[in-house]
Length: 376
Image 1 (cartoon, rainbow, N blue to C red):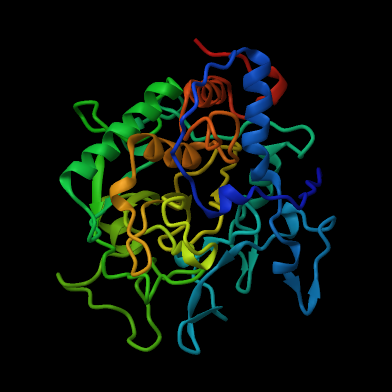
Image 2: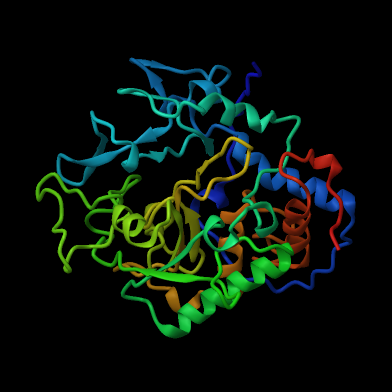
């Protein structure tokens, strides 16, 4: 059985936020070597543990050379404790668990109630990769599923206080560009062939309350001080509610005004921290993925694209542009780290970023990065 070592590196910009400003003319030579180099650079973060001392066995920190995917018990449920602090709950419920941020690729293993996923080992083994022998990971496309209208990645737009129809149209335009640049259908679509947009109202989960900090309670809206929310028409939206009503198992939620408060990172940099891609609103940890038995990203998980801050110290929602939205959605669908033309001084999105995304999606999943070619 193949062990996978996780190396301790992280790209700061990928953790904290993205900027879309660029004043440079950028015309790279895009060839096979270019997409191979940058596909590896972009996706290597998925195979890197962020901080081994955040995962403990008893009171002992697990050294980084021992923190492997088969040791990563990565699903947690968080609740309020001692005011605004979150702690891992002492119980587990498989429908309210999420990946933790120290292992970007994860699958269910053991919980307090025993084996959660009987296919856990086959999911891990399907990756068949190590850091030095990097292979591609991505979502399935329309040609790789039986029913693309329901099996691809669902898309939700959050009806936040910053939502407008114009901003919804901007999101749709960005999603369409991602699919055009990837050369594949990635998101669920309707009978007319348009990307299927669903709406969710998570506006009651505010920065100052339920979602502040690294963890969030969006699964069932549970708050220890209040109990479970009402189940009537005034009940808040939750993942459980969306799963029951829409027949989904997860999806990506795209939301204006829910980026994390950048003042906790760097004061006076409001304009720089305009968006991120992660596992919830108002947080800044790197996005993490479920991996299915064939080594694909699974759509059976909730991801978030947060566009702009709207808090007392910073409101930059009006500065979110098309390139930034495309950039953050690209993070969700498989471009992990920033690289030349993708989040550096050459801009948030470029022909080079599109070429790398297209090369990854044109090749079968688990393709060695040295076998990638420029896709036509």
